[in-house]
Image 1 (cartoon, rainbow, N blue to C red):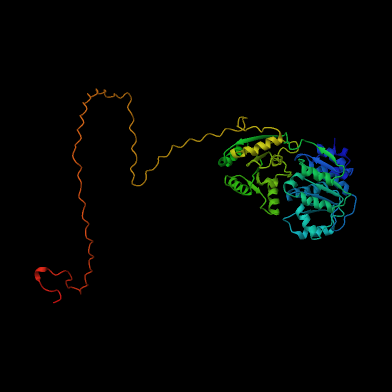
Image 2 (cartoon, rainbow, N blue to C red):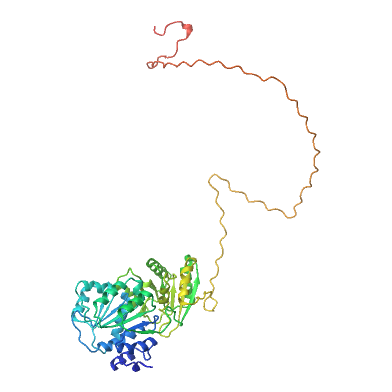
Length: 473
């Protein structure tokens, strides 16, 4: 089947052909005709299956007929992160170049004045994150009563980020008679409850079992100690001659430190995490797409939905805390029919986390041991001789024990001495016990009077008796 068989317009088919696509993916094949028929859709698809184009392409044809009005967008696409919103905007620019459609991007980290101006001129497609949209709505800068098409993308990610209450609030502001498209990689109970409340008789489309990893990705787990992670990463990057890769970490501090370490070893590494502002994050992504840097160290803010072509390897420097994040991390490789490899570093503390991942994907990830001919085992380091303990100050060092000579002749055993006869016990003396006389009590000592002070050079001691004179004369 080709895109022409899906009912798309000739102008749109030209844009698709110019982008280099001629055959739709399974999710596109099933979703595009239903969207053109104005049906609500629940699409369950793993990342890298062409999910974004499955709603962007039919939306362009649907919105080709109509008139835009100031402050009232005709359609709304909700994305969980600014990166995903920017990526969807790129798709609209690429496929809608032959249509007169106006688009606006409503995300945080960008000055609000330019966004308000774009809304005041009227837009056909509004791509927004829930937080910035609610902010402008409460300021009275946007009206949602004219929005007849709603897309909720990455719904399970919205749930993880706590956006479900905002989405419910937004849905109540939209017209009741509208078309709603919901896409998600998994269908947890809160997402199902959301779909039951705000979708009308939706068509359920599932192109892969929920939470399954792409079969084009060779998965490995690497047993490693925490302090040896960086060395192991450098070893794998060199041994497999990695052209480009994304390295995922659980913490922002780890992202910064690892990127700095890789640069110090001569690697062209970049970083992206939540502490960076929006222009800096987009610039770093563009550097990676352009090949200026070939290793991108990222937190999970970049894990979902980013469509970067040619990523051959994904490294989970930290085992993800949430099993769903594993699916979306490794989904950055093996896209559009290409093959890829994913390595997950597992320490002793990650036993529970990796067990949850394997339970979710329904398979045991093989342990990587370097036996496939591509990687070589790391040579074991020679053990250093144990250092002798220095003696404390004033303490003499212990002398080394003298080696025992082999077959040293032992002295002959001496004959036992003759036992001496036991001495006869002396008879006990029958002397009367001596009684000591009691001592007489001694008279108390007389206190010595202090001698009077004498002038310098005069005698002040007692007068000798033989002088027989008075000391006062």
